[in-house]
Image 1 (cartoon, rainbow, N blue to C red):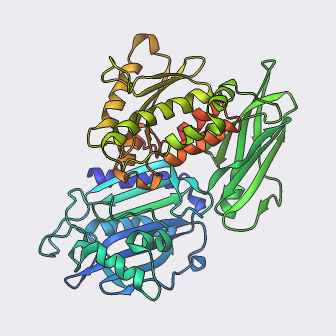
Image 2: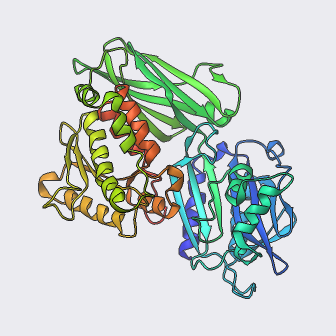
Length: 491
């Protein structure tokens, strides 16, 4: 069996652990007509909890040459057969034969079927649109694509991607270019500028996510907000908790939403509540669907006045932390002396951010005498967790291989005999927005377990620290900012 077939087989086997979550598959193929053949540009296959007749059909999408979006809904039990057909290099979707092969320079069918697959299980995924709720969710994903790259179908059309996107914007029923069509009509984060080859994306949402804004511990009352994609998922949701008290006692248990405790809508929203007693100071919660733990969150008692002396000092020197906020948003698009000044200023800002939260911080990036070290090193007060931070105004690699060096240096720390029991967390901090971070860079971060903090992450952290977030909250935030966590052996 080939590696790609092993990966697909492992992905399908993982779905068997929660077979009741999905009843249908929503197939949407964005295809380009080249030389009389329809070639796949992007195909999304989403497992859906509804019966197939209840899945929405997009009406106002391109449906004729040279670019069309074809949709078909089938039963969830047909997924294995569908993927087998795609592996042969061609498959009929909504009555149209779609070619899943690499294009040759002569638009011939002689190209090989897609030869590469990556599966990510129980990964943290982002919703395609900023208005979707929940913004992040847990799911299993599979990507099948060309192993050799090569031209994309859209590249063979007159004017290429730019002309296609311009036509989409000027249509009677417009979309904001290829990526806008993928985001709105397909629910995909596909970006043709970052994705170098056509691919097939299978998404199996596990159906639930913590609503972090609705989760709190206040005077002994634990409230955990939960989003659920379907009634089926909601019925299988539970929250486990471990509560810690100042006198070293603890209590643990599980809670579910009460009967009728889920709001209507898509997604559903539930609130799970436990009375732990006023002496509870810290609770770690675990969201579960059936036997699977999807994510966890630690909350502190917000009824107590928590004075963070580090924030008070920073705010005294920098009113409302205005300079820090500005420094975390520096632009990479500057030149000359200003660019040279912005890089160390950004490094200082990242160091100040962790210092304000209560970390012990060393700033090495712009110090003389330190070569080939981290820009920022932040340690928890107990010293057992070390954040190794590399800073950049632009892309994560910046053409110099920064992520690879960061990972190597983090491994060097882990291998120090004196740090054998310590946790080292590599972090790439960038002044770029999340949408400007390349997918290839996020994939690397996922494979290596590396945190990526883009501009929005840094500003969210600053807001949280000003509201009273402490070291444990910052650590939990950083762990959630690892893009995805693939399993071993490609799974």
